[in-house]
Amino acid sequence: MIGGKKKCIGLIFGGYSNEHEVSISSAKTVFQAFNAQINKERFIVKAFYINKYGDWIDSDISEKILIGEIENYKTKKQETFNQEKINFLEGIEFQNIDVWFPLLHGFNGEDGSIHGLLRFTKKPLVGCGIVGSALGMDKILMKTIFSNLKLPQVNYLVFQNEDLNDKGVKNKIITKILKNLNFPVFVKPSNSGSSLGISKVNYESEILQALEKAREIDPRILIEEGLEVREIECGIIGNSKLLTSEIGEINYESDWYDYDSKYHSNNKIIIPAEIDSKISEEIKEIAIKSCRALNIFGFARVDFFLEKSSNKILLNEINTIPGFTKNSMFPMLWKASGLNIEQLVAKLVDISLDL
Image (cartoon, rainbow, N blue to C red; front, side, top):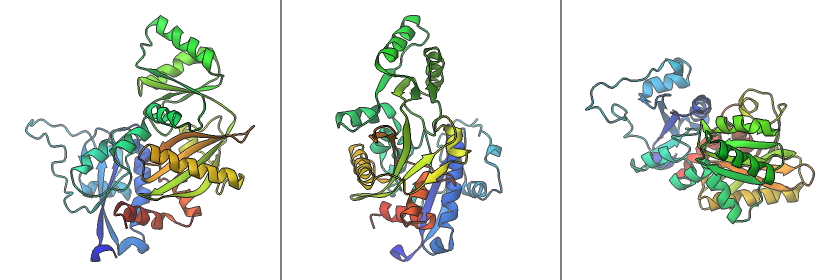
């Protein structure tokens, strides 16, 4: 047992984000893992649910959401009529937390927001810091850094804060896409996760609708060339030394790996992926190099494409708070690497304490 007493884990989940429901599912898995017999003597968990309006809910209600006694949608918006009550953490007891475990996917969490807030508590947290989280969430900045390091990626274009109501601007964007990329292309908001706001575009006539969909989430838009690829993923844990998991592959039945494919479909997961050992080692090397480039540590999932025709490795993106749901790749990768979910969450806490 560390330090002679149980460590109190502050599990933060939910959030004012379009990935709210995924966060709840992840937190339920992690909560169960910490409460497994193997971890009960080392840890206690204090839950902190942030509802869809950004309000922090007290620990008793938060825990009931995790164990299924209360449905999260029944926590309503808190109306604040007394303007003196401006502290959004008022009434939330968090002084006895030893280690924070934020599981806020997407906006206002995975983007570094929660990491900045938690820094003021002077307590360690599971995962990386503000800079790595922000860069990992922002696809445009992430890809720009990867490009400067000559890391292999698909061809892409960036459009930032363009006025899509201007006919001339729209024509300029379409012309640039047609000139530089081959169909199909993927149109993505720069800041989003779980494939939300992303469209696969096969024809010129579909571009504008895809741009509008992405702009609803972020006015900064990334457009990537679509290739015939295999979806390859690698888990990372560690601080000064980063460790890589087994390499995994996802075979999905849908046209592409969209939100429904990730959370609602019966995908075929292959771990270890059926790829040449030399390719596997190269993927692991790129995974570590890319995380180092963005100052990402603690834990992350690095996603790759493997072009079917050439076996060329293409770095896709890094997820700094990957999912922990029953369908999530990250815990599966580490289970195949010798750490079941109960061991994994304990290991992540040890890493945050640099043990």
